[in-house]
Image (cartoon, rainbow, N blue to C red):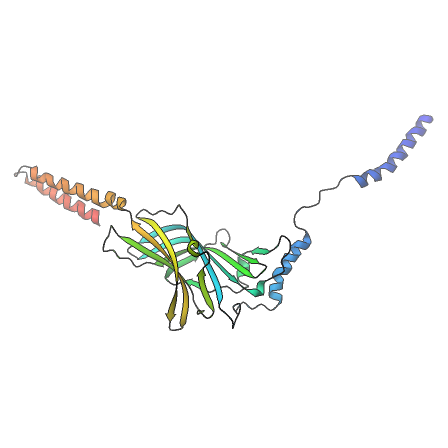
Amino acid sequence: MWVEAVASAMFRVWLCLVPVLLTVAPGPAAPTGPSGSEKINITEILNSFFDKGYDKRVRPNYGGPPVNVGVTMYILSISSVNEVQMDFTLDFYFRQSWKDDRLAFIARPGLDSLTVGAEVADLIWVPDTFFANEKTAYFHQATTPNTFLRINSEGEVFRSMRLTVTNSCPMDLRYFPMDRQQCTVEVESFGYTMKDIRYWWLEGPKSVGMSSDVELPQFKVIGHRQRSKEVPLTTGNYSRLICEIQFIRSMGYYLIQIYIPAGLIVIISWVSFWLHRNATPARVALGVTTVLTMTTLMS
């Protein structure tokens, strides 16, 4: 009997301890990421821009001083320089920066800027920038649109995108193949005159960068520089930025492709002078073959 009494008492003690153990047992770790309230705050900041009657059709400071748009470029590659079409094609990051006080917000600890996707660019005012000497251009879409916006608490907007542009490049070929060429990328506003928009190189002489991997089979890039100018047109004066890229033709390519083969063919043609004068078929065949080879080489 006493064994059953002890077992019954221990069972009652165990039943009393189970709730206590469940109470003090460690639960799952609390998430360390941003809290729900922080996420809501970011959404509220974005929504607040447009709840105040933001009109993307109107530039910042409308009726006041012009908007200063800073520009930088980073050239990833130059795929071709075409003497026949008089153009060149390059792939680059194009970055613009301007201030829109309507997009200012109250900074919070750890939240002094917002990085957002391409969809926000369709909701705010952006400069109507175009390339004055452009022939064709396209915007990269794989795997998503290659662009982003960064907005800081003071209303500074930074926009970056990746473009491939084919620009016109008039060339002077009088000294071919020992020539040098200069091609330009010209940035301008399509509709806003200097009363509304002024472009400037955001980082001064370092505003244009170029990858060390840029290579061309027929040209070497010997340098680049940038400048700005005011362009008078019938509709007003426009602010324009110009990036000049200097090329020098690679003589090695033409030595291998033209000069050395042509020299060898000329030397071979001299063989006919050592043939016997009665070997007419051989001399004629050698001369005709030399002419045909030169024609094929220069075509």
